[in-house]
Image (tube, rainbow over all chains, first blue to last red; front, side, top):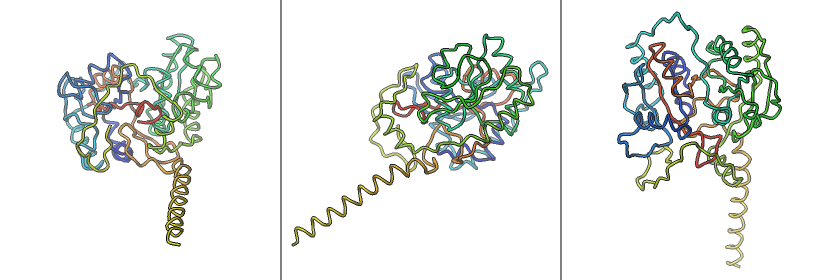
Length: 260
Length: 88
């Protein structure tokens, strides 16, 4: 799957009819069991680095078989859009009154959030609160604005109450707030672009985030060069779950598909 | 004389290879990321544009799906390639 697959405008539009989950493989022991169920045919198989499938709303049933990526199931992103539209028609989303706002789609940790932001070439947003309650309040404000089309999918989120988590963010300091962070090329560090005060109104928060996204310049990367330079410079990422050593298949891979 | 023509060919070839190597190391910083990227969902634009909003924590995504009754578009992707972070 190349980036054009999932960045198709129609695909982004239909994705709003789904809850989109992208877990970071090898980054959570508890998630690993679910990933094995979702993506492997046999429990003895090792978890592979990529996987794609569609699940029912309760997460218990596969609506489409799992494959390495959407390009293994669809010839192009248009076909994927058509299939997602078919699936979406089968479900009528619930109208909820108790909690109308979707949760902030965050990463597990600040460290992982900054790495994923770098992978996507997007700015990160770190919610930094003095305690859980302040974090929840700030996330509640965020959830009120980030699902609007002007902001959806433009940031990678994480939250914390621990100042130590922010040691990797230059300029973060100790003051709480909503921090907009530029990840470095390897996603191992970040730089504070702006701090939005905890007292910010939702209206100003939205304005601030739109402005931050507009001012952000994405840094295109070449896959091969990035990996080659990273290995040469010793940029190494420690995963929570060990990455299995795999013997590469001698079978030829289809053109355009990357082997792992 | 034939030997020096051969030498000359090697010299030109080597110079060309060095030139290509040098230019690719510079140019490679700039081309759009159009290559394979299993986890990426962002177009190659230098601007930040709307994209898929991904839940990165499984339990939170599952809870949201249960709450809303929406089906789940589910991907797992390693946030490192051959141990190097910053690349799907």
